[in-house]
Length: 615
Image 1 (tube, rainbow, N blue to C red):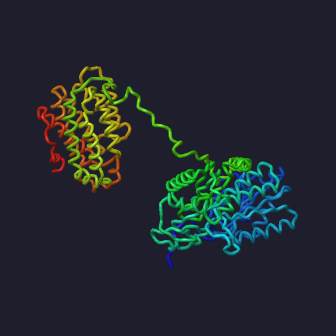
Image 2 (image 1 turned 180 degrees about the horizontal axis):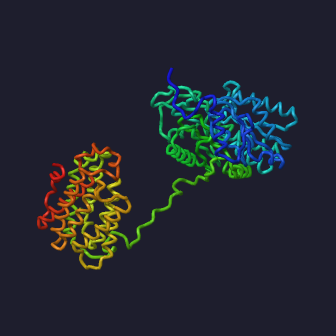
C-alpha cells in the first residue's frame, strides 16, 4: 500500500475538531456548541429574541469553507460538521436546531446525499415533536447525471452556496419561515452545476489516488472524490468551461432550469475552486465562462469565484449557474430583482466571496492607454537640449549593437553559471531593437536627449528582463539630464555627465553598487575614465571608457556576488567567471570605440569579445 500523502495535520481522527478551533480563532463572530462540532453565530440568542428565522446547514467536513465558513450575519445561524465526507450525527444536528431556533422557526438547507437527508430529516422530526417549527430544503444542483437514474436524484454540489446566501439574506430581512423556505427552494430549482477534476482528492491519512492518468480529467463529479461520469483527455480552460456551459444550458436538466428555450437569460455564476487549483488558472476559467455566456446573449449579472465548496485537495473547477430570469420576460423581473438583492445583501460570513460584480462585456472593461505627452516624444527635437552629430551616434550605436548580438552565445554561457542562461538572448534582442532604430534613421534625431529617449524606447520594446529595465532607466534618466543642458551642441563631457546621471538612477532603483559583481563594475569605471579623457575628444573618451570597462569586467571574476541572481550562487561556482552584464557593457563600449576610431568609416564589429575578459 502506498504511503499516506504528506499533510499538515496532527491525526486524522482529530482533524475536524482542530480545524473548527482554527476557524474560531480566525472568526470572532462565531462560537462553538460545547462538546460538538457545531458553530453558531455569536449573536444567535439575539436573533431568536428578534424573532428571526434561523438558517442551518451542514454535512461532511472536507468542503471548507463550507459549511462553518458561511456562519454569520446574513447567512447561516448554525453549521453542523460531520467527519470528513461523512454526515454529522443526529445528536449534533438536533442540538444545533435547539440552540439556534426561536419562535420564528428554522430552515435546514442540506445537500442531496442519503446520509444528510436521513440524519437531518430525523433531527427535524425530533425537533418538530419538541414543538419547534422546522422546514427543510434539499439542494441537488449537479447536472452531470441523467434524469431518471435511480431514486437518489441530483447530487448537491457548489450551487448549494447560492441557496445558503439567498436563504440567509431572506431571514435577515425579516421574512417568515414559509417565505425563507420558498426563496431557498426557488434558488435550489434555478441553479445547475457541472464540475471537472484534474486530480482526485486525498483523505487525511490516506495515500493519494492514482485513478487519473497523466493527460486525463474527469467530467461530472460530486464533491466526495467519487468518479465522474466520464474520463476524457485533459483540455484547456475554454474547452472545459464550454463543456460545463453546454451541460447546464443544453443538457439533461436544461428544461427544469428554464434554459431550453434558448432565450437570453439574466444569470449569476459561481466558479468554484474544488481545492488546489491555482488562482491564476481559476481566473482564466472565470474569463472563459463569462465570455461563453455573453457570446450566447445572456446577461451575467453577478460573478463569484474562489474556494466555496471544496473537496479537500482536488484540482479542477466547477461552474454553477443561477438563472435569475429571462431578459425579455417582464413577469420574471421582480423575482430577479429580489434574488439579486439577496445576493448583494451584507454578510460577515468569511466564506462568502465579497467581491462579486456585474460582468460587463470583457472588451468594455478596457480603457485606452494614455498617449505620451508631446513634450516627451522621441520625435524631432521635442526633448530639447543640445544637438548631436547623427552620423557619429548611428555609427557608435550600430557597432555596439552588432557586437552584443555576436556575443550572444558567450554571454549565455557566462550567465548559465550564475543565472538562467539568457543574458546573451536578452542582449541580442535589445541589439536588434537598436539596430532597427539606426536603420530607420531614428538615431539621427537632432536632439541628443531625443536620441537617448529613442534608444530607451527601442530597448523597452525589444529587450525585456531585468537588464532591459535597468538600461531603460539609465537611458531615460540620461535623456532628462541632457534635455536640461544649456550647450548648443552636446560635447563628450555632456554625454558622460548625462550617462553618469543615468547610472546613478540605475543604482538608486536597483539598490546595487560598485563592487557587487554587476554591470555597474564595468559601467562606473568606464564613466570615470571617459570623464578624465573627455577634454581630448569623443574618440579618446570612448577608448578610455572601453579599456576601463574591460578591466572592470575582468575584476568581477574574483568578486563576491551581492546583487541579482548571482548572489544566490555559491562563490566557488562563480570563481574565474566574469559577470555577464559587465562583459556586455565592455563589449558594447569596445565595439563603439573601434568604430569611432576608424575616422568615421564603419568598421566590422569584432566577432570575439576582448581577450582580457575571456582569456
